[in-house]
Amino acid sequence: MQITQAVQDGLKRTMTITVAAAEISQRFEARLDDLKDKVQLKGFRKGKVPTVHLKKMYGRSVMGEVLDEAIKDTSLKAIEERQERPAMQPDIVLPEDPAVIAQVIDGKADLSYSMSFEVLPKVEVMDLKGLKLERIVADVDPADIDGAIEKLVDRSVGYEDADGRAAGDGDRVTLDFAGKIDGELFEGGAADGAQLVLGQGQFIPGFEDGLKGAVAGETRVVTATFPETYPVPTLAGKTAVFDVTVKAVSAPNRPVIDDAFATSMGAENMADLRRLVTEQLQKELDGASRMKLKRELLDELEKAHGFELPTSLVEHEFNSIWTQLSNTMKQQNQAFSDEAGKTEADARGEYRKIAERRVRLGLLVGEIGDKNKIEVTQDELRRALIEQARQFPGQEKMVYEYYEKTPGAVAELRAPIFEDKVVDYVLAQASPGMRKVSKDELFKMAEDVSQS
Image 1 (cartoon, one colour):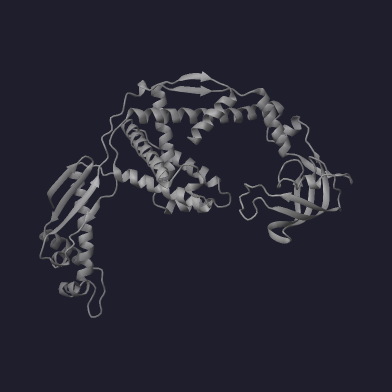
Image 2 (tube, rainbow, N blue to C red):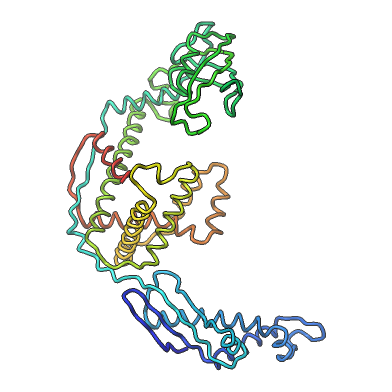
């Protein structure tokens, strides 16, 4: 192998690599010798097929494999010898002239091809102790603990027959209904044995109001209007008329908040239940705090590093974002013109900046992690996989098989773990200050971060 030409332009690299015909021939003969011991041809004993006969039957296909292997081996060797770090898979271009390729295949000419790629930039990481960060924290409010326990009670409400009385807010009504728009039944507008708790706004406006005061066995005609923002376009803003039969009215039976209720929730007693609820609420606050701090950290890292980005990586990231956005908009029947003052060109510009940010931060996070020997352990990957499988009850085996058989799936599982470990390392170096705010302020800050 010989590198006959190498061009360097910023992050771009272009090489012309030549593999001598003698080396190609040597690889070809070695492959034929290996093939001779494996093939079984009529009229010949295994391992005794003449080389001339093998060349006649398999020569061109074997040569194709040899050339593919030679290109793979020599391109990797060229990259290693020059200690390059390609940002993405190199682009390899063979001669366009069929006559030249034919001579290579016939063993009469050297194999010459060009290889082009971009390299990863050299990233000089700032002194992380110089980052100016502030950790926003909040404490759990006792009133929130009481509110959370009340929600547990709400979810634990049982129902019993209302003894013939009329339905009111809080009661559960069991009913059959069939709805029509302009005298025609519409899809999804009918049900038998449906259950509806009055006062919770579970149905379209006007429907629940039309059932208040009803008793078991009563039939009613209820008129209700779908909101203009209803997700089904054919129903949005339309008025429907429902024929309703009330089959049963049930009164709520709220549990008493005591140790027995706490036990039913998996706690030892009410004190233990309050402790568990407090821990969960604090976990939510800490999560919001970390989200805010992590965004601030990444913003500061991005501002402090202005190295050149590989165009190929940015383009790949942008295409991934744009494809996902386009598919989402198509599913929701949206267009860029729906948003006042914005064109597709404007959106492309915005999302390209997002792509650039992601690439820059990805390279920074990777550099910090590599430099400080931060690794994701097999145990951490195993726990993440278990957590992923838990999100699909009854399909755990399918999830495990997916990660076993899908190239790159484990890398996608590893990436957020690695990022979080790098973030923890940077935070330990930066030693951010701390400021206490109210719960509402913290959640507002976290919401602003998630929407920006």
